[in-house]
Length: 96
Image (cartoon, rainbow, N blue to C red; front, side, top):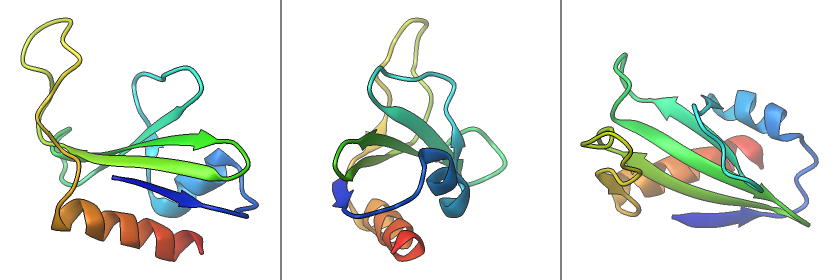
């Protein structure tokens, strides 16, 4: 699920702390990758990519499990639905 927040005068680190996320193990160039665990285990977890330009563009999904085999980037994830929409709303309310 992708959403945008304009006129947000915060750093990515401030955003991350305010919404309760932590840096992911890997980063894509041009995007900041952060996660929020739902349980004490590594999965499931929310995974959020933030891209900064004139505004902040957020790309959120729910990782259900880690990749099935070594070197795989794909995983079982939810990119929409009630849980993902609820998390997007929580993030928006915390930042606005």
